Amino acid sequence: MNRLLAQLEEERRKLNELGIESLEKGIPLAENQSVQEQSRKIDQLIGRLQKKKNTGRGQQQR
Image (tube, rainbow, N blue to C red; front, side, top):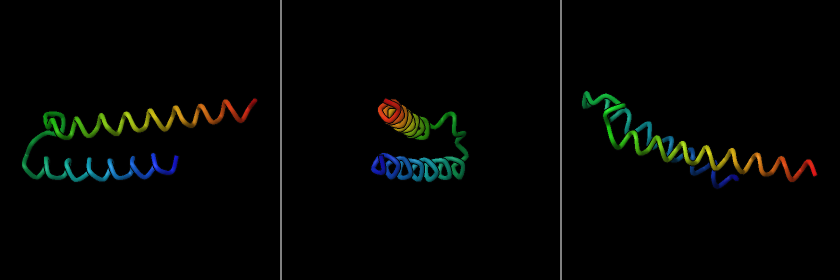
């Protein structure tokens, strides 16, 4: 799980950089395809983390 957390932090850092760059260029975040794709990557990682957490909890309760 630590690897997933590290990956999530790295992808969040990339998203922040893309967002700042987009705003500096005057491009709304919602219209920037790179920002949207990076955001989807983060969503997927969060989903994987949640699934791993939920799976771990279910096994511990047995």
